[in-house]
Image (cartoon, rainbow, N blue to C red):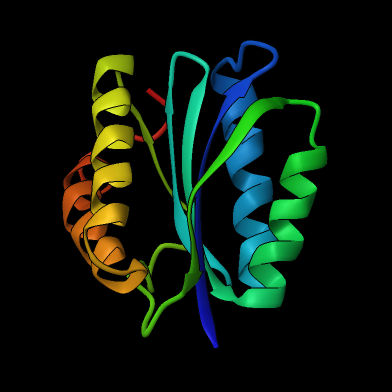
Length: 140
């Protein structure tokens, strides 16, 4: 069964360009080995991440994330089964955003979750996030 989990968190320490590069490199390697896909958005020490794959793998990764001292204030926005991957080609898409944009995206994610079900919420979320991830210049 395919599964999706969306969470938000705050960094406990500032992440400079090199720290973000290392985080993403590690995430992509881990996710590829476990057939996980998704996207990570970062703005001024705040994260919004979408994970998708087998439920056991997604939850195992989320358990690791919750133990990671680089995060605090972790809150699940959406979690549950989905019919298909919404980010099948993104081992871990990434975008560095301004905080007002990330805050607005977080608000839209919460509203989309309340709207219908996690599959439709993920679809509208993919449509919403794709321009940010596909047109982002890595590590700016």
